[in-house]
Length: 308
Image (cartoon, rainbow, N blue to C red; front, side, top):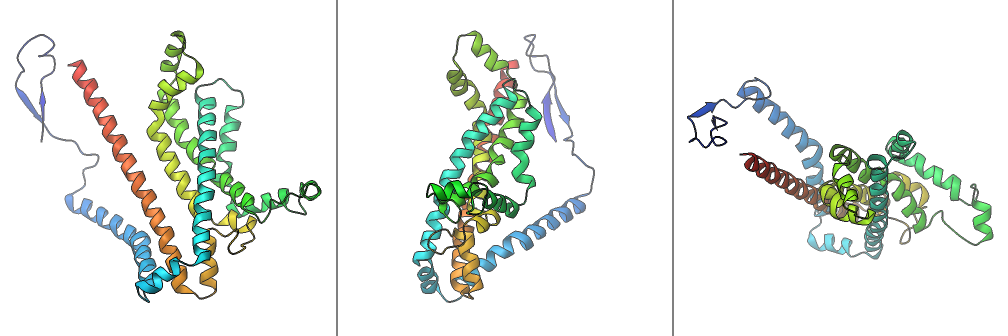
């Protein structure tokens, strides 16, 4: 039961009227048993497809004991794969942050032509298979590709190098920041930016003092999603990297190589490391969501108190 106060009393300087008890409405009228059943099904689904695989990964990684587990984690090739994964994510994510902010600004705040086409192009990596994206890069930058003769003439190698891994990762993670910001910035409109223009603010001042504070939570959420995809990308990277151990193998590729060689302890040890990175990413996402909801709740509460 929720308690409400009769409106209008404070506005006219009168003491609050009698408190009225209102029944809290629910979205549906299902019984408590049905709600528990739905929650149980959801939890069982999460356990089977999320909790159980994570448990198996760590169980298999520790099957031969902690000594074998930490020995596998200290292997030079695994450490190189982990460093390369972080390096690629560290390059791809900032570049896609810049692109995402620029694209969202142009689509929602600017008056650019071809807005629909720009949105479709930004969504293209989500519609194209990562393997197809990798093959496309090979057709462009491979020795037999469109730019192959020019690259050979200038002694430049892109295919089967770290550069190719970075390019493929940038492509598959390109939409995440933009797709988080576009709906948010469309909902906010351009009123505040127009007011800043009338006060003589420059473009950089408008972005730094008006736009950036309004989009910071959506931007951070997009960064988390982009980083998670960058670290876990397999399809496109497997095509363009050549899977050269100790040179172009990221953690997902290194895990597959170890598994195919029946080195299960090392494979699951590497998998556990990648799973820990994923858990950290999800924890960061959860903390950002909680902070965002708490901030919005405070704003709404302050607005309600100012109207009373």
